[in-house]
Length: 124
Figure: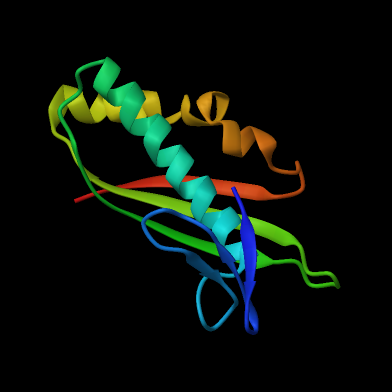
């Protein structure tokens, strides 16, 4: 991976298009940490469900984050909500597997313990 300086911002080099890293003009580094947490949790959740051959539909993943009150305002909380469809026994299995995300997600395990991660499921 490589970061390059482009005018007044950094860009993370990627073969399919660089990512702009500047709040207001792209993603801030804090937003990337929150997004990486949600993405990794989603990949892990779906892999666990697929290994168990659970029938479900992941419609979207909604995330939010909160910064700490005092300088340097580190991440204090990341909220991740999985919006899904599942019925009957599959829904029960989704709820069971949900509790296995944290122990299988390397990004979650890499976060500082003071960062509270709240994950939830909303069935539609």
